[in-house]
Amino acid sequence: MIILGLILFLIGVLASIPILTTIGIVLLVVGLVLLLLGRSGRSLGGRKHWF
Image (cartoon, rainbow, N blue to C red; front, top):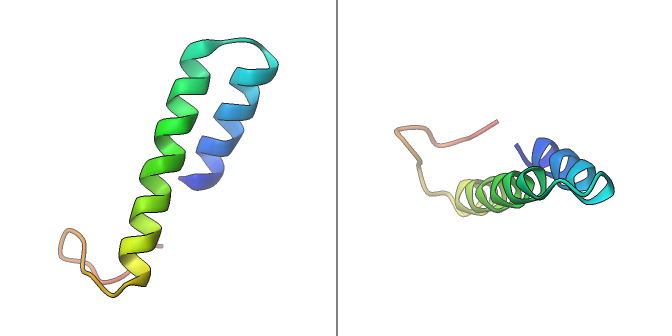
């Protein structure tokens, strides 16, 4: 999710498409939050690890 967000963000910036930039930022933030919560040992949605 983080990689997809980064790719969409870069395409949005380079091609001047604001909706791709916005979606990319949202995916980056969600991916980082899931990563941090998974690393802290909290279970998310009944799963201890998100791969």
